[in-house]
Structures are given as C-alpha cells and as structure tokens.
Image (cartoon, rainbow, N blue to C red):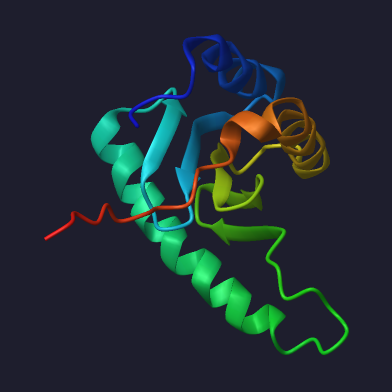
Length: 136
C-alpha cells in the first residue's frame, strides 16, 4: 500500500504544518513498510520506515523488562545533532514517525502526534499479513 486513503493525506500535512520545525511525517507498518508520507520523498520515507521497524523491535524488548507493563512500545524519542526523531504506536501493527528540527517544541509535537493517532487510528492500523495458500 503506497498511501493511506487520499482523504487522510491532509491529516499528515496538518501535523507537519501545526508544529514548526517538522521535517518528515511517515506512517509505517510494524515490519517497516511505508504506508504514507508527507514532506518527504519515497526513498527517504522507505529508509526511515525500515529503520523504525528495528527501533520498535528494540523498544518491545526493553518494554518486556517491566513486569507490570503491557509490553507495548508507545513512544520513542531520539535526539541527534540537528534534531529529533519521534516514533509513536498508532494502532495495531502501525506507527507514526516524525523527524523534526532541533528547535521543535517537544510538548506540542507529542500532543499533535497523539491527536493525529486518535483522529485516524483506525486508518493507520495495518491488517495482519496472511499468506495465501493454494490447494494442491
């Protein structure tokens, strides 16, 4: 799936425009496939989506160390020279990833990402992958 429903594209754009310093907005599956993107080219979005699959896997391993937790990754924030990376769970098997400049308002970004997930959560959920079996 290259894009979410076209009617959802404006919501990704709304996030980017509502938080100054937002560079890229990507929606991806848990196995690192890009579902949609805003303000980025396909190659960059695909690279980031693939990297996110590894991050969510590492996060799940860390979450497993909390015996009273639900073992689910909710949010990962990485600060690097030049900016921030955010990865947020967006429903079963789907994630929202954002790259932002170093001057971004982290509180506003978190709030806007949560709002976006709440608004389109059902559209962000990727269906489980099923292999088709053919009768022999």
